[in-house]
Length: 338
Ligand code: SF4
Ligand code: FES
Image 1 (spheres, rainbow, N blue to C red):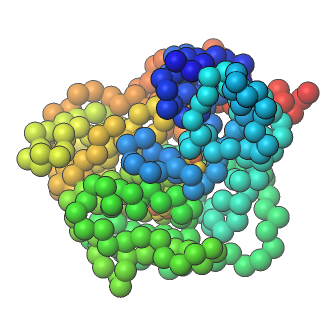
Image 2 (image 1 turned 180 degrees about the vertical axis):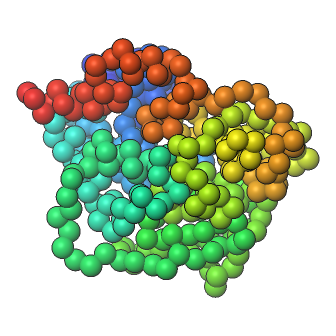
């Protein structure tokens, strides 16, 4: 088994593992080591051929392998680079790499409207987290930002192209989970955009998963829009016997009192859906009686939702730790202070 060392922490991984997957294995082994895990805005474990678009997961390979120890000449996308035996990688320990990632984030934000106060994704937005950890306070961009009118694609999904970072995840969902893909990225370069060809509505039974995989607020749930800020809701795990053979019916209900404001898939510690759900579960079962509630949802992310009073372990950690709850922030501060 190849051995890889990331930010000084070693792990043996199966052949064919990418640097990002190896870093996540380290993070799963010990929560305290999660700072070695690069952010990933386009890679999605369960979507084939995802990754390689956004460049947020770049790392520096300081030693190629035991056989060929030469460092790689420039940062590489960790989601697309396999580990080699003896490889050494820097994620947060190399100031140059941290700087390069900040540049990627600045680039992603060039056209972004930064309309978090009115965006439904606020509080669970990966771009918001990324900007907080790697962004700059002000933009150097002086030109007019490109803008698009929000459009309805189907009865349940709203597209705000202005917020899109062209990660292609929704396209992969449409390709791999639904029968008829009617949307994609059209045009190239700075005029690229997600579009339904000739405004076709997206109406297949798994299309709602595009909302869950979208790392920003570009695809939002029209049945939940402006219903509540996400941190005012109470997420609970629930299930039902779904008639759709491809859907397990394992969901998170986002409640306000006994009212089901939203239904989503369950996400793991890396913000990825554990099992995709059908549109019937997502959009048509807004009655609590339709579900068997299992208990409070543990939100294992560093977004504002994780501050919910359900998560006692998290609350305890916040109360007792003088350090920020994001290990990477602490690391970066350490780097800045050097
Ligand atoms: S709409 Fe969302 S999921 Fe689709 S490409 Fe844009 S950012 Fe990615
Ligand atoms: S997550 Fe690797 S390039 Fe986007």
